[in-house]
Length: 410
Image (cartoon, rainbow, N blue to C red):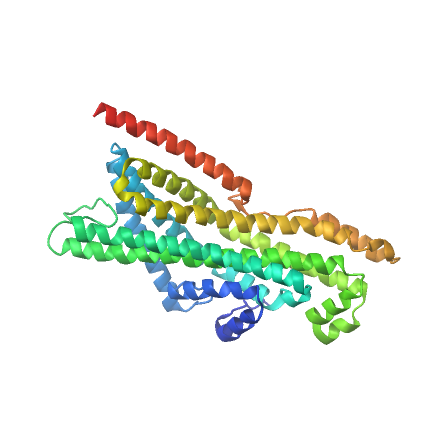
């Protein structure tokens, strides 16, 4: 018989209450609230929400087609093309995130159920370590909140000026009709206005959710390190009682080791699902970040009237790129530290040959560091962050030289 698909929908209140009780797991709740606000929470699987999600997706596709057509048509005007291209890439970013949520619902839902039901609680570790891990989860929320605040400030400046000052379009586009006619302009402006704000909150809600999910996984690796390191000590008795309740009090070392192995396999499976679900999104994120940082830097140089707007725009994308690389680096680092923690468990004090053999197998398996990548091409870590910054500067230099030559010719 087919295994029934795990759903959170019927237990949404219980899910939120349970996640809130854990100081680490609760960091996913802001992402849940934001995704529900844009009608994209993965467990909303009714026909209405599915239809609404795909309607919003195709709406953004139409917006993007007309918007990108303007860039293609005006590519010779480098400054104008770069300005419009900045919002073209941002809209594409929102489209990819929305498509990921719509097409990967089942996988994301399954991950959420495992995190909720099977992840070990933060109370397993000692109080000092608990404070450190709690601060790490809070830092992930702070980083995404900085991006949210920066993007709202930047977007607020962008959406008001075209209508109030110049009667121009919010998103420069090429239409097969005269958009400047009576009522046409107002309709197009309202359409662009709501689409633009939807893209902003779609991007932010996805990022809150993704960053929290990866952070929870990296902290779960940190919790496992302590459990493995102390598996042969008296502290392990407390670990077993906290994780497994009454059943854990009668659990021997070998049985606990098997449970740790199961938890490790669970985490590896979740990391693989995260990689399969989000690797294209990460690739697009790198492309958008490079384009946005380059465009903002160029406009800061050549158009001082947009200084504050472009400064906030650049700050938003820098913080966004940083927290993506930050959580990816944390995940790979903590998963890589697991083998060292296992080796430090005083295994030489155990005379059980089966226990030692199982320990060797787990150490070998834990040598495989868990990475998130951009479509399997580039790893998500701090080294990649620096590479993208260098690449952005290279493109900025190229575009700046082209713009200066263009101005000299004119």
